[in-house]
Amino acid sequence: MELSEIIKLIKSAKTIALFSHINPDCDTLGSSLALRLFLLKQGKTVSAYCDGELKFDLSDLPSVEAINHDAPLSSYDLTIAIDCATHERMGKYVSLFDKGRKTLCIDHHLQDRNYASANYVEPHSGATAELIYLLLKEYDAAAIDLTIASLLYTALVTDTGNFMFSNVSPRTLVIASELLALGVDNAKISFKHFREVPFDTFRLKARVLPKAQFFENGKIGVLFFTREDMEATGTNSTHTSNLVNEIVNVGGVMIGVSVTEVRPYSYKVSIRTHGEVDAYAIAETFGGGGHRNASGFTVNGYSGNVLDDILKACRDNL
Ligand SMILES: [Mn+2]
Image 1: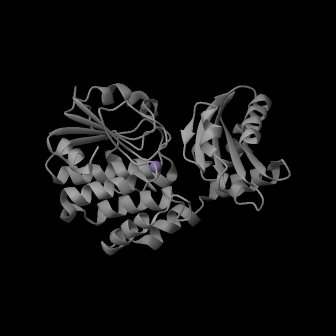
Image 2: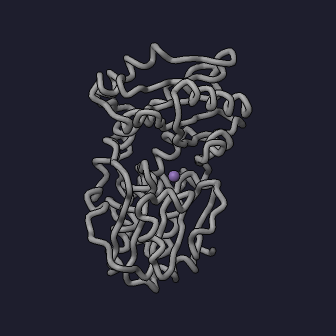
């Protein structure tokens, strides 16, 4: 749908609910919070929801306390799914989303989707935040204040791996530049998201990295985080999400895998790949999703079988 039609759709709504995805990241939450603050300025009644625990790196997003703060209305004029590749990604809030008189999806994932009545989807966008920025700029550029800009910048910088992923386009950097011009503190945001490691996470890394396993002549690397590792270091499954980079950054590794034991026999898996190796195809085998070079899924079973199944999918896509 054209951007002008999306804006018309939003303008015609009085009450709006925004939905982020489970296992939230800075893109889904930052985009939602930015859109919420902007729409409040436009006089809308707007609430934001997310089914899931917020990791430490999300805890200082400006206005994050607004997430799940409002009691839901019985229905909304418009519900908007943000960065949600599938309907199910909204978790327990799916039914509230469906109660919208109009439903809209704003996203940049690869999946085909038809769960919303309107779509503003660009799979090649660096982040959903890019799409939100373009939307806000056309809607009312003057209403993009420093807080909104900081939220969008945080979403953009994290979803592009500090502008190092292949999803960075010339447009990404133009948008980043326009956000910086509004006063965004990029050094502070980059430190928080790309350099700072909480002390407990450091201890978890120190414990798990020596146990890294490599397969296919070092082309596949696997980190396995057991519940015992996390208990011993005072961490939990939300602390492992970025640690997959430790293994995909090793020279020669084409596929980096992190497996986190969330509950007995239940594992959260993150896949990172280089170049043409398709992380999305690997995740799809297990009902997951994502992008060409970054994807994820959950899988149940005995750890040995789970690892064998993941390795098979990796080899098939190497
Ligand atoms: Mn995203």
